[in-house]
Structure formats: C-alpha cells, structure tokens
Amino acid sequence: MQAIAVGADEAGGPLKEHLAKYLEEHGYEIRDYGNGNDQDYPDVAAKVAEAVSAGEHERALLVCGTGLGMAITANKIPGVRAVTAHDPYSAERARKSNDAQVLAMGARVIAPEAAEKVLDHWLASEFQGGGSTEKVEKIKEVDAEFRGEDAGA
Ligand code: RB5
Image 1 (spheres, protein in one colour):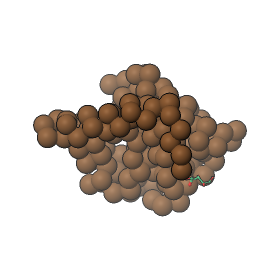
Image 2 (cartoon, helix red, strand yellow):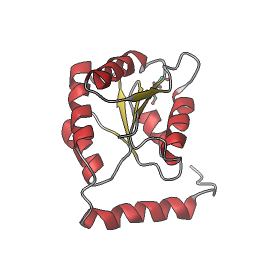
Image 3 (cartoon, rainbow, N blue to C red):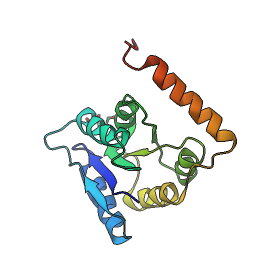
C-alpha cells in the first residue's frame, strides 16, 4: 500500500499525532502533512486531497475539531470521496459502498482509543464492487459534470 496521508489543523493535531503513531506501530507507512500551527483545516484538507486526486495516496486521514470541515473541503477536489465517520460501521461502509479514499475524524468528538477502532475498520475494508460500482460511477459523473463550474451555495 502507498503511504497513508495524515493531516490536521490545530484542533486535530494531538489526535492526528496519536493515530499517526498508532499506524506506524502497526506497520503502515505514513506521510505527514502537518498539524495546523500554520494551516487552517481548508489548507491541509485541500493539500492532502490534491495528493489523493493525483494518485499519490490511496488513503488519507484528516483530523480537525469535528471532522466536518476537513471532509467538506476534501470533497471539493475532483475525484476525491471523503467522509466523516466516528463509528466502525460507517467507516467500513465508507470503503465497501462508497470507495472513500479520505476519512475525517474530529478530535472534539471521539476519544483516541475509539478513533483507533474506527481506523482499524476503515483500513481493513475494501471497495466491494458489484452493485456499488454503478453508484460510485454516478458520483464520478456528478463530479465531472460540475467540475470547474460555480457550484453556488
Ligand atoms: C476549528 O477551526 C474547527 O472549526 C475545526 O477544527 C473543524 O472542527 C472544522 O470543521
């Protein structure tokens, strides 16, 4: 597997550090896009999502206060499917059903040990294909249709 991208804003820094260490202890290579002392969540989410879109990472983990702003921003980058998930089932379905490359979590929402479990399920799950393929293709069609255009509010 390619290195897993990790990044955080100031609010997400400590949880990101905890999870990056956890990933390394479990044999994953990581590429760290920083902790947000000089970057807000849209800055780091865009940077990481651009790298995912360019094929540099199959998976990325973003941590902010809630996991919401990171996912919203990452989903603006063409080809990127980002989710906020704080429970193992959603994390698993995000891979199996939605082929999400980016997982966002909130340091103000979830405890470090619970976040490890969510991460475990996300990493252990792969896109299931089958009936989900057509649906993910439809996401890609929407992405292509509106790319570059003013999406308004
Ligand atoms: C702090 O900027 C906080 O708004 C941020 O970490 C995140 O929760 C945004 O979605």
